[in-house]
Image (tube, rainbow, N blue to C red):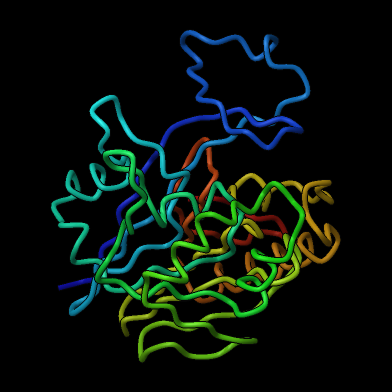
Length: 256
């Protein structure tokens, strides 16, 4: 069976200097009521390979009114059991990407994917404990450290015959991206170095990046590789296409 990718949308949110993510419904909410806010979509991805089920980042970890994790419900809607997820590949550990590593049920914290191995850059894992930034929620990582299967990796390399990872930094000091290649299809997950397709269209240095200039240069580099090697790109914060291919025409990127 060919590689399959499912977008697990958690919806739209606003976030301000407090780093709190507040649900935002464009049909009901007015952005003017949330000054100095960034408006983003959040969507992890589920990848089905021939012999394994992989999750790319874990979202915010919010639950519905019944107390069920949105992420679990989305995986079930895609036709899979969350307990069958074998690998959770983390681009980095900011809360909007790592909140779903755990969930709260009956007042207790539980692992969202008890049978999976959580794969992270060693430097990012250490930063998550030592950083004073509110982007890292240490209680999550304390629980994961005590209860989960963890695989800490360094630099760039090969995780399996189908999965490679590249250390990028840029968005945060120990950010990484993933390329999944089953021999027929290539899927690229750029995390927050390439979170939206529009960031290929217009070049800019983002204030929210640790090294904005490097992130801008990496977006161009990955865009060119995506066009040349026909990568399907997955965009974690996209408000438009969450999965797309890239073409390069007359030096300009085109999203298809």
